[in-house]
Picture 1 (spheres, rainbow, N blue to C red):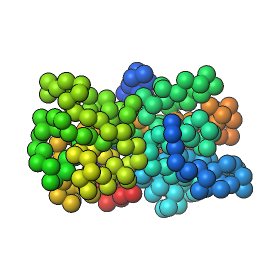
Picture 2: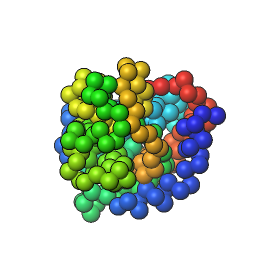
Picture 3: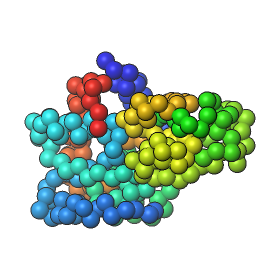
Length: 259
């Protein structure tokens, strides 16, 4: 059993409690999916907004392998590159279920938006510095730039890292780079000094010779069911089936499965 699966099972029960205790701009992603994204010709399909990360790839594997279909789930995966885009999916109703960060959910103030945690997912993150910057430890980040998503679990983790190393708030500059692929490219090309990346992007940077400064597995993220879907008995049943499909796909997965 992989480290990720062991960590998932260990964290699963506590995550749903921790997720809410820590309590928008977007690109044109939604326009790329036509009627699927707006509930037109594929209106019976459960629309699930996902990020390009290993934890969401479990669901992609379930779809591509036919597992979801065999278990009776008709779903359409709607890909986004950034948490900020996911916020837009929450507000615009572009998906019935979406992978989100509980801290970002807490920032959504609209009274009508009450997303509910469907399945907490522990997410693997690494803080990686560019190989040419000469940054070998956390203290080397002083006066340098770290790319991350603001108002998120990753920023909270970065704050904990700097605090534990006795740094002041302004010692490290946080560059808000919402797109995960863009953040990867900026670290790789040295446009920023370091960045927080999920998998498989983090390991790709390591394979290119860049340096790991810290790694962690964080609670507080996962799949949320939209307010509208909560009111629809069919969508509720689909969402519960999605949870079963994910857990079954996770059980079957191996470390060789990558997004």
